[in-house]
Image (cartoon, rainbow, N blue to C red):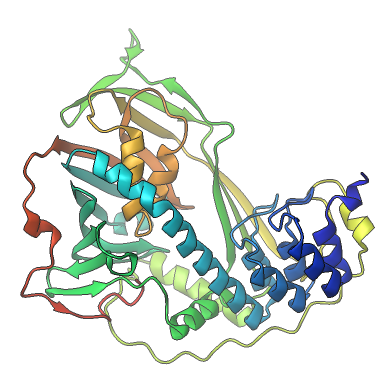
Length: 439
């Protein structure tokens, strides 16, 4: 079969043949199939501005999170194209697909938690940066994690840390595995003595706010290249070298150097105006001069919604020209790209211990609960790599292009008797559905 005939959905999108596309989607065609450039049919529909094709593909649950060879998702391409309604449709579908995935994984997650013995664990985060001024301002966090049956209690001194914003506090996440999914997650502010149920679905206003944020900031693609990562034993001693062994808390550990850890960052801004660029630059300069962007809970003014951009010039590339290009080397299909790429190598170490009583698989089950919040997502991705033998009791992981974290498992002990009240909302706490507006 000729290469241009292997992707009937893609070809229909290129030609804008909505009737044929609809017929193909009703038959046995893989809607998630990638072409030689890594693009799905939804990628092409977005880049070419074929709105009817976009809506038809989304109606058939085309995946929104999938990335092409260059690391861009259909949502990234929609932001570049600049049609607000298309961005909104893809964002809604992405959130729905995320909820569906979590729902499918929930039974296995709960089964894994129930099989584990109850435990108490302490996890220390120390954030640092190669930028001296930034490093001086970064927070640290001590997390206490307790497990009882299929429930998790997660105590933290850091409300959130994302995009150089954070809020100090004393908060607790409670995950109740026996409760219905829409009631299983609660966050408590132990200073204000209030709690908030974490909604599974955002309000229309919150989604519109997110669209405004996406349309006014760089399109980012940052991923850790894991193909070239290797581990070699760290050495100690000045003259007589030997493999490095140290105690990490109570755990005897072997140290390894992580080689080839590279954070590849891509940044696109063809959709931004000069005014946008100046505003974003001013925010970064404010932070690096020593002003933290910690939130203070003050109400914000109602934003003016971003309007759609004028569409880019029509694409004059044929399907045959596109599909016969070398992989990833096709001509631009949408708005002319303004791209900045960078790659930064990270010098990192990891301490592995066979004394740690929890397995990596068990840790991943716990992180499945807390990873949707905070920086735990990065830790989850790291421990999913093929690590040396043992458990990673101390490791360095990149969080942002300029920020890394040293993560240390300081304590761990199994528990025979866990007080039930630790996994319940205190009776003197009142419900405040607006305490954590981003959750």
